[in-house]
Length: 321
Ligand code: HSE
Image (tube, rainbow, N blue to C red; front, side):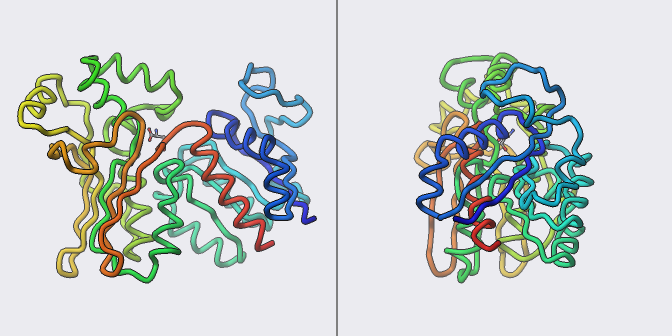
């Protein structure tokens, strides 16, 4: 049986989900792939903090170097979020001969060119499935199963927090602030929810989809982005009267060879597939020149769904080691 050692950087919502899947499905994964995963060390900010999963304190550290400099660790899983110190940790881990799996869309979208150069130099892999749309395997879909298509458009609800807020404002009549508080309690929102409500998180994810689907890197700052913070109950009621739903849509379209992309709230007819995506779910509508129209829907945030994507990347990389 192949043995692979893992170091986790971060042990929040997604880190704990990843830990749970690798622990509870350990036997299933070993039987299916003939690989045994061992989580050797976990970087935390506070060793004594109460958590939803039971982990012996000897596995926890507050010093990232104990993971990055450990020669026995094969894959570093970065789940800290934000650009720094994540970028420095990822860079140093690659230089120390480690493959990377991350759910951190901010660092991938903002530092894509630098990280691509680095992973090529050191011949390492970076798994980014968990960066876009949580548990939906959209990265695998566009880079493998659909990779023979020219994409005409990719349009999606890529942020669970804002979709949850818009759904709660619509269906439960909640006001914006109460709905936002609920998403924070449920662990969907970013540490600073401004990234969610102002569309920045969706723009980061769109940047990754544009690069992988259209072979062009667009920095998230260069994507026209409007969030949902100015959407009122009145706007939602008006949309309802017109049989429409307001959704935060991230869109990239190949318009006769010219790529057009943006993130903005759009009123969609009730019967549009994306209008039916509710709560913290994400939905992605892909049009390819061979496959035609495809709709992906599922949990776009949360501990186990995002952990599922992280574990999928860990297994895919481990198979190549
Ligand atoms: N804050 C993000 C969201 C988490 O709400 O979609 C998943 O990327």
